[in-house]
Length: 298
Image (cartoon, rainbow, N blue to C red; front, side, top):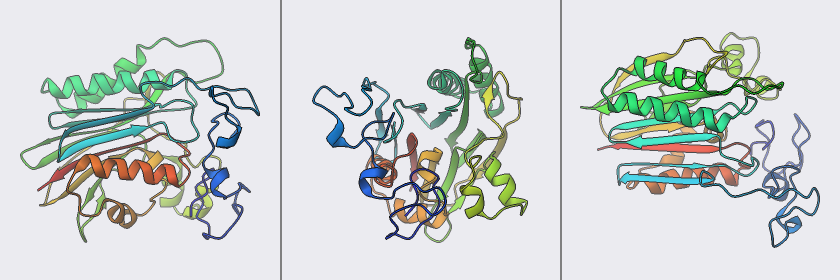
C-alpha cells in the first residue's frame, strides 16, 4: 500500500507509515473531515464535524464527469482529504486540457480554470500548442493577487490535441500524459518536479525522495511568479491503445507505468475506465484531487 500522507510504499499489513508515522488503517486513510481527518462517525446529519466544527459546502466541481463518446471521456474529483477540487478538466472535440491548481498558491481553483479554458479556446481556434499554453499563462497572470503569505495564483497544465493519429502535447508541471498499450506503455511527459530532478540526478532514491516534504514541489508552473517555460512534443499513436492524461492525485498511487497499464486494462468505454481510475485513487487514500481523461485509439 501507499501512505495516504507521504505516498511512501509500505507492506499491506503495516499499521503505521515507517517514513512519516501516519496510521494506515482504512479509517485513517479515508477521513470524512478534510480539516481534521475525523471519520464518518464524527460527521453529523447536517454535515458538521463533531471534533472541529468544520462543515464543507458542496461545490459543482467536487465531482465532474465528461463523456463525449465511448472513446473519449474524463472524470475529476476533489478526493478524500481536500475541501475543494483545484483540478480542472476540459474536453472538447479532439482536445484535452488538464490543470492542477498549486495548493500553496492563492485561488488555485481559479488559476486552473482560467488556464484550462484559455488553452482549450486557443487550441479550438487552431492556434499552436505553444500559443495555447502562452495564452493560459497570460490568463493566470491576469488574476488578481491578494495580500498575504501565499504565492500568486498558480497551476500546472498538460494538454493534448489529437488529429489524424498524432497527439500534440504541451505541459508545465507534474500532470502527466501516458500512452497505454499492452507491452508498449510509456510515460510521454517528463515531470517538472523536485522529486524528478533529485532522483534522475542520483541525489536520492525514489523512496527517499517520496518521504521528503519537498516530494510534491513543482519546478515549472503557470502564474505571475513563473517563467514562460513549457515542454512540447508530438506523439504518433502507433495503433490501438489509450492516451491517458492524469493529475498527480492519480499517478501518485500508481508510480510505475506498468501499474497504470494494469489499472486501465483493455478498455471498452472511456468513462467507465476514468471512473475506475478515480475510484482507485480515492480507495487508496485520496490525499489529493484526482483527475483522469482518456482517448481510446482503435
